[in-house]
Image (cartoon, one colour):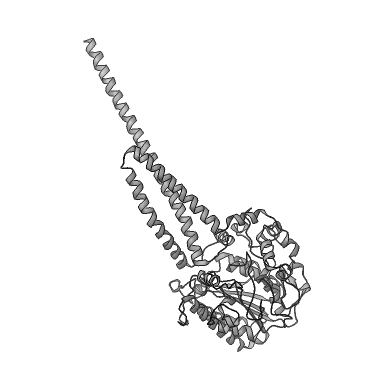
Length: 524
């Protein structure tokens, strides 16, 4: 009996051990399955990351040409509200469709590997890991080369004293305004460059895309790099919209610091600069900014409110005042045809006030990709972008002619300037194909108070527009220099003429301790 009890206990122990072993086996299996799932997820994530980086950069360069890394970084840290949602939707559709076409079959293959033998499974998983890691390395390398990260990092760790040596502080420069102050209407033309004119006039095309703008330049003052229609060269930190506006109103590029980027704090925007708006405000002007998009995009609202206390009227203002509803939004907000209509309304009001004004406009229809076709656009050219450019030229001329008919025109100077070279990739590709290497930003000065000593065959950047604008209003500037800009009405050498375009570009791409300390973080 005792022996039987012992045997039964042993059997129970064995059964218990078997149950324990079974539990351990189940736990090991679950751990293995969990580990496998994590490994599979890692493989899929690595491939997704590689594809996302590759196709994102590919979309950017397919649609914008050679956008700079500085511009990409800047727009990552500033508010994105007001972005053209159509462009964002196009990006997501284009990018994620291609990712899905690759990632879905890849995921199916990974799942299939789980059904094969353990030995084969292990071997093929090794292959998968090798492929996924190779994809990441290839993608990162491609992105690294495409956006020239190596050169960017090199410039960020290579200090230059060029800005410190050449910068003329506008807040400490003597300026004398005429007794009868001239009003200013400053029209920024999105992406308008002289490339769009005819070959005969110095451009790239057989048929002129901007005949009206070309005529305006000929009949008035155009500062040119040639004997024909020409303009300003660009430089890093001046070649996207808000950077171009900073360049033309503060005489400095919009530089990015990777040490401690001050733009992400976003309480202030380049507080150490002293701009056109501040000078005009100090001398009794009221500043206005009108644009057909959300002024918050890219920090424009902050910059203009903090540098001249501009009264801003934008897409949101149009909704607030009942000019349009949110459902009426097109492109980035409202089209240029509405922009010029609202501009006329605003000018009729502010021109009746007893103080000089600075009325600044920014067009938007000619933004990449392909621009916006409004009801006024004609189908003249094969490609949409050329038709939009042609339409913009015509509308600007109509607006200028309207101003000339107004009683306030007699004491008003009109300046028309492209903000930067177009980012439309088709134009850049065509320029490369045609070996058209002298792309410059458009400018025209109408009803200037003075005449230039040498308007043609000048080498200059958009930063030179800063003191030149004030000179066109009849302002006498001590030394004819402000910021990094030179008054083009004078015979003073610009930085581009003094040092050469390439040298200035190279120096401005480098890190400037002076810039970071005095413009980004300093307060005046």
